[in-house]
Image (cartoon, rainbow, N blue to C red):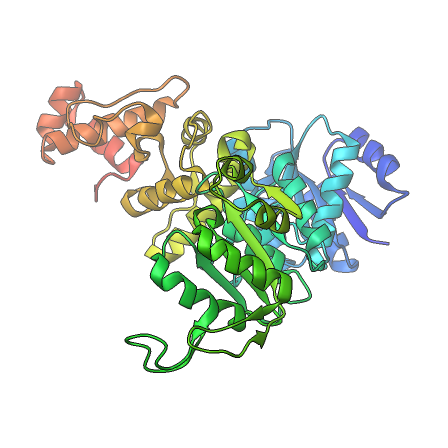
Length: 455
């Protein structure tokens, strides 16, 4: 039985949680950080359920210390405040995820089980951050990052079909991560040790696409100086992913159907067929059923491909995933650019959540990449986002406009106003102080407080 340590300075909550969870786990409780660390040293604890406020002690400091001492222990932060910013800070500090009070025991149990499954590397593979769909390196952007109900359903379907030798058709708008879904299916399947071959049917001219798929013999056409294997042959024992399958020419659709049926390919310029054993995964942003009705796609091929359909929801229908995605991309690009950008403000998150993202996750990734590249602060602010998101397009191009947003912190408004005025005055502090109606000494103190200059 897994062991859980519950840390909260309210005894009533400790008692209630112990009673609710003791049939499922071994439970230890602590009402202060010191006792919690004593228990952690004395026992092998799998997970800590930790309140973010422990009297006068900041729970974030406890999370950081716990994560540093016991990185293998999963942490779920409990907060009565439920703000996006507080939740992100908890995950930045080392928490697996967070829950808000009042607690729903059923949802809490699901979260605990996911965390424990993630810790043990179990089949679920969810980490509050999502499912692996790439190499897993520190700069890997090929991750399925999600914890929304819509994406949990997608993850569930992936788990159910991953080891079944049936064709999968992935549908969804551009930028939703269809290739990531395909990679996740392959890398979690019993074919994972073999090759994953991907090909975008819309990106390659028709006269080259056939040779890419089926390969060719030396001398098969002008420029064929050596024998080359096609994607199907390279995917033997593994998986082949054909993206934008709806753009495949009708003549090639017939040849693809034959390969699916016979599991044989004949390279261009050859009369000999080659046996191939592959898992076929396809994707499209088109309505293939409509294409069939219009005579643009073969009906028999459609039925062959559409054995299991996975529809990837657009980002606008799973906006609760935006904070997690932002945090993932922040870490990715901070490491890539060698910058210390550790978070994103609540007002910036709110602006992102109010946006519809026609380019989906790919657009969000580009926005965060740009923000990290241009940011001069460790926290991405609203002003670091493009005008399409904020509704303000003049801030970056005009030194005479500083936008103020409803709900923005006064100290942040003050910081940006002083910074913009300094820029407008080309660093002349006396002129800046005069324009702002401050004494030079007061301005000096503010510059030092906000870290705007050397002081």
